[in-house]
Image (cartoon, rainbow, N blue to C red; front, side):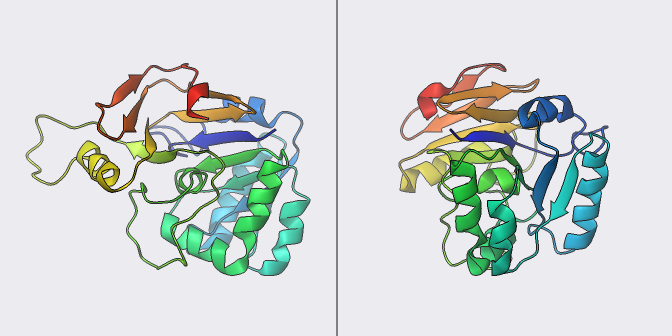
Length: 232
């Protein structure tokens, strides 16, 4: 039974790192007292790991930072839980593909180890990273990601602002363009929200709703606390 906790964002305005979701994260992790952290979405991996370690130490959870080496598959295979942090999704996926750690994380998550993702770490839980907001600063082998859920995710989803003078595409327009070329379901996760999956159950949690996009259909608004089991 897969257990997934997929955050739109790791830092909420006016709050510290993971503070907005930590009570729910602790509930999700349950008896876990040691997790493996994947810092590859940022360049300074040591500083990133130190930040995450300091936050989880407050919760009595030890953090082991993963290195970008194929031999680290052993650490993933023995992990009580895996946390993949945010940053640039292309850099994250490229590193995981080149080291073979993408497969190792997929196996561990499918074996039932809790998977915690934030932003880029949430993006790679989907079949592909095609709905990320990030710039392609590196070129991965492919856009194929973990595929832990059968739908696409767009973290940091921003609603159109009718008062804006910006003439570029809105996030909704970009996702509609994606659906012109791809027949998929996309969940737009607003800031402060997350998806929690336990086996065949999927729930939207947090203080705000989400939007679900489907090809040739109007977006569907989903209220906080909604069960989204049908997406699995």
